[in-house]
Picture 1 (tube, rainbow, N blue to C red):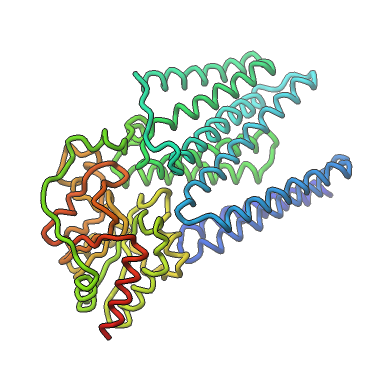
Picture 2 (tube, rainbow, N blue to C red; picture 1 turned 60 degrees about the vertical axis):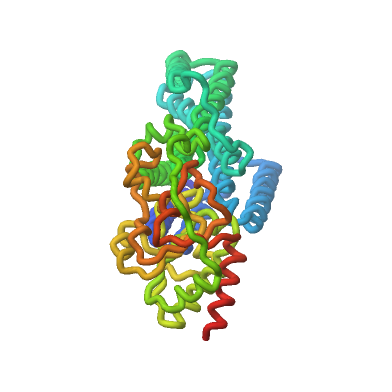
Length: 465
């Protein structure tokens, strides 16, 4: 009876995961989709705990619920307090914890089979070793990604003959894992493989440039899902298998979509070190003059416009200016101005960063327009206001074959009638190269912290009633 109820719990969990993920594909339903998935996971967890067929000591229940309580409190408080600029770091840590769990489960199960005296089947060993290797790579890689996103590791590290070293070490880890499956291994070798996989995760992520972090986060997320799926195979647990497959496939598809948005193969992301700071900037400096606009100039221009497109970037998140830009949007619309937001697939530091940022300020989802849909509209736009974005609007992606971002699809803001760029300074973007758009005759630089500058702009517009 318990087993049948448990299977029903797992079925409910699997179905909610599928429907929740589908709902996450639409900004309007994403929040409810996340909640549905969480409910399904809760049902699966409680079913596993209370419908277990074996005898469980009360102390075990106390330890399980104690650990759940501690993890829930830490996760809840961390998520509540995290700033929007630190959201990518939080995603990296959470993803790394998932990989660590998968690796530790594999170590525990391998130890169990060693001590049981009964040799594990080949299929079981494959699931254990694959979960161990992939989970370990996901954990250590996510930790390096966290350090890069957090600014602790500002520049990619390039070792001599790095590509060869990385490929040889990856081959070594794979052959080591295959040997463990073939021979049955030992505890000492299992821990050696664990350490080797952790080291490879570091080597894998260490040289990747900051501009590629959104892609790397998606890829590591797919690794964690794959490791969880192997855990599902190991335990014959359908809900773990379903969840792992969904996370792994979604992460892989998102990675490929983002690579396409950057017009770069995944291998180039991993080995190219795009966004390597000054190294990337060499030979990509643009010569020209810029003109600066005052808050009054920008206010007058916007007040007499019919259409405005706002391009948000990471600088908007840094300044925490999402609420004031929503206020600017509502003020302009009250005066009959059409306002939309142009969203580039890799804007920010993680997939969907700008969508989450603007949703926090209650910006209508209908106003968030994807790159392919908004690009044809720029030529009929009176003013494009670029706030904290850089590389995703850089015309060098189309005009300069020597640029490291050449070929990357961009928001074609240069086609607008007037271009206003809000930045703190003339500094390069995350890819480390100068922006040709700064020197466009139609461009005016609106310098200052985004929150302060936009607050002054709103105040100036209000005086023009």
